[in-house]
Length: 88
Image (cartoon, rainbow, N blue to C red):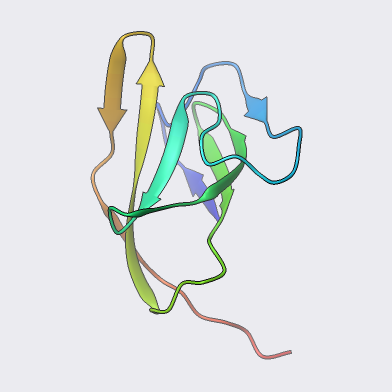
């Protein structure tokens, strides 16, 4: 998924450079329902691209972003999303 906004991550963009994808990148995490973490592909101040875990069992989840910036930790307000799978 892609999340757009401001102050989401580091000023200098960071992209994952290895597999498996990390759960924290550039001091940024995306947390699902307070217990699971997404796998991060790319983070910047305006955008976060991440992969949801494949073992999600619900079609509605709540996620939030946590960013560590020097000695500060910022957390976003919870974001509720609905997951649907396309039939091809």
